[in-house]
Amino acid sequence: MGETVFRLGYTVIPMKFRLLFFAILALEVSAAPVGSPSSSRVQVMSYNIKGLPEAVVGTEYKSRRYSVIGKLLAERGADVVLLQEGFSSNTRKLIEASGFPHVARGPSESTFYGVSSGLYILSRYSILAEDRMTFGSSNCQRWDCLSNKGAQFARISIPELPLPLEVFNTHLQAGRDNPPARSRQVALLVGFYKKNHVAGNPVIFGGDFNIRPLLDRATYDEFVLGTGLGSSGKYCLDHGCARLADAGWAGVWEHTIDHQFYSLDGAVEITPVQVARSLGDPVDGLRLSDHPTYEVIFELKVPRSSARQH
Image 1: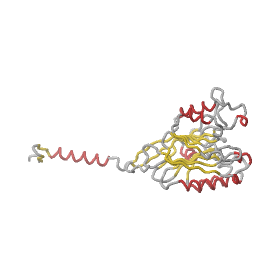
Image 2: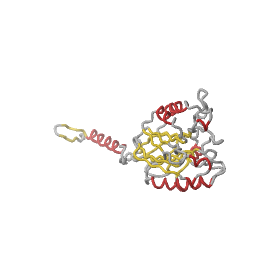
Image 3: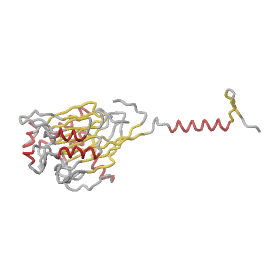
Image 4: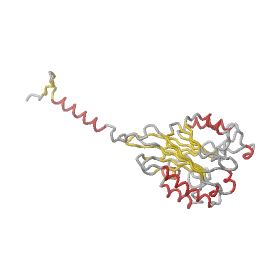
């Protein structure tokens, strides 16, 4: 029995090649990236730099450390950096040395003493929108009332993401005795978050919370339940992606006061893949800060079919 053929113009195509053509076409269509997930990684660093005037911090912290910190931030390869206690004018040297092209500043000087919030967000990517808030003089205690503490927000355009990344940075009331002012500040933080968060957008909320979950679980839970965010430190302790144990105040979750939280739902799935702390030791005999950095690498997964909505 002869082989069945089809004629296309002047070309005769044997049946077996025609079937092979359609089989390949079907495989290509099924493998097309329309609904398959894509992912990108974003490295976020939170760092309290103890940027107080030298008259306050003493000779232990030299002014030349600011440029050194800036260069080290650039070397760490972070995409976004959250700074706290950037009160000193020398913070400008740090930012310049870091080379980050996009900078958002938190609440500026408005207290009687002319001290700002000390908050900055540095980004490799474009900042699309900003907002900021202060806790106010009625929601602070003791020395913290000398500064204009609060929180800041930046909406950042991340390549390959269909939606912008929402980044929050804060510094809460200090004190080991769980002062009532801190709980009031958390309530304000939750309100600030709800004001700026767009449902579905991915979120990272970091900073120096001055909350040790092991010692002040009520205030910690108030923030977590109010925002619906998860702790990157707890996640990595549970899933083996923490680069160190949760021991001492420089740990990654229950013992530390520095945290990074992330959204648990939305159009972009966020998963911490590594939590680490660095820059805790002197560099060339120069002490950098009394905090180590808190660094998290997040994997963000999105369907390729999602249209960019920046």
